[in-house]
Amino acid sequence: MTSARTVRTSLGALALLASTSAVRAQQPVAPLAAWPGPVAATPHAWRAAHHAAAVRAAQAPAIRGFAAPSRMPLPALRAADGWKLGGVAVAALLVAHADRRGDAWARRPGVRDNDALQALARVGDLTGAAGSIGIGPAAWLLGRARGDSGMAVLGLRTTEAVSASGVMIFAIKAIAGRTRPYASADASPTRWDLFGGRRSDSTRSFASGHSALAAAAAVTLAAEWRRQGRSGWSTAGPPLVYALASIAAGSRIVDRQHWLSDVVTGSGVGILNALLVRRWHDAHPGSRLDRAFLRR
Image 1: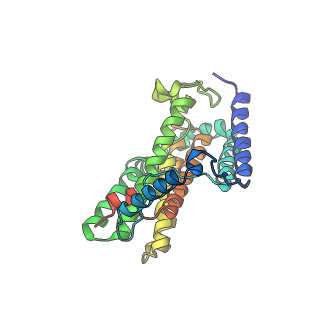
Image 2: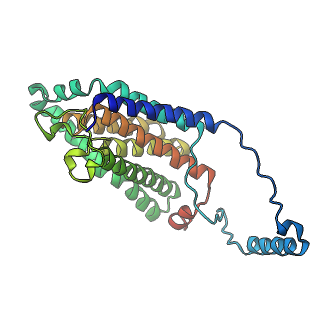
Image 3: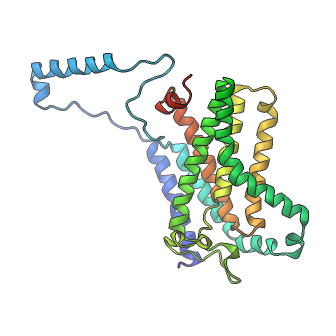
């Protein structure tokens, strides 16, 4: 268990670390000097190594429209990503002071007995879970069945962003061990149990998985619609998916599954993963993943 001061200190350290990594990412890196080993000093060995490299390059598989990388590196964090991570941490710090007030609002009879609000919360719960997880594979299957490569790409990218967000959130939940609002009558947003999330669902409040998955799906869908210029969807689609993601996030507070800062952090994780997936594919066109799932 840690105190509220410890929690604020941890989040502040995260923001400082993100800012520091952003500044360091902007520093130029000096090129490595040639290794003055025995190979460089032996012409025969140098020629043999050069010939072997040329043979490997000639034998590399060439697929039209695709590169053939020998490995799939993870997306590299840039300076801007450090600031984004810091922004998420700062936002969580700012709204953490409203965690208790947010849960007090959710416990009001006017909220608990409001049929329209509860119905909206059920829509959000469905959108943040099954909807966010299923829309990517469904779009990919539809695109493959109809021969629509753009739809298949949209589905694959959405699946990637949602999957990455789910893995990250699962790890955060297991480590943080934050108590959910509904867990007990005296549940507190300052109650954390390191690695407590591995033991019980009631200690997996931080961060919100529904919010992360919905945000990842919404950002990816909106970006792909705009990039592909799909008729109608490029204009009407983004506001729709952003609204559904907001409803999914809000439903977690109404249902007393999460504190407000959990929802903000989860949404930030989803947005960041969506941006990283898109950037990685921009830098690695025709990746091994694309060749496996998008080849005709």
